[in-house]
Length: 272
Image (cartoon, rainbow, N blue to C red):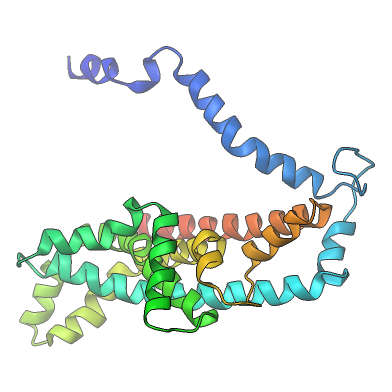
């Protein structure tokens, strides 16, 4: 009886589920597939196919715009690494306070503040951040991008870290305390290692969000400062070129690689 009841509410049994799923996958991934395929097109034209070639990938590193893209890529990776590292540290401490801290005043408000960047439209966050920096007279540049990305990435890092911590029973820490460990030792030597898969996943998610961000970066960056997304946007405004597809494909590859690493980290932990 329980089996038939669960099968009744199985969403896959509803008519049109497969068709809607395929349509969603097509809308989401067809443009990515097209960009990837045409990044190997030997033709200068975006509409004519003249065979497979790596000329546009070579052009990214040796072409007339190569220096601009190299500097933008370096900025993007430096910003993403710093923002992801700081936001992951803050998210870890926040998750510890929220989950291991017990009940305290304004706990619900604190959780709402952490989750707020996920619910507020990114354009609103970008405008608010720009107004804040202007109001305090903070000169825009790499530092403003790092600060904005760090604040924006905290909830993305918090989600996998908090989910992991909720799956770790506090009996391990209680046992450590019973064996005369300090609270700091129980946290650093017991809880943090157990949380490491969630921390790594949170770092990777924050890294990808920072690396791919355009809207906030475009608002808070200073004159002459470019990241890879803003450099790509600037080149597209002058006309779509095949080397842009090559850069986009490489950026997509980095994101896929990071997601794959996160998957295997969580999978290897679950198999223990």
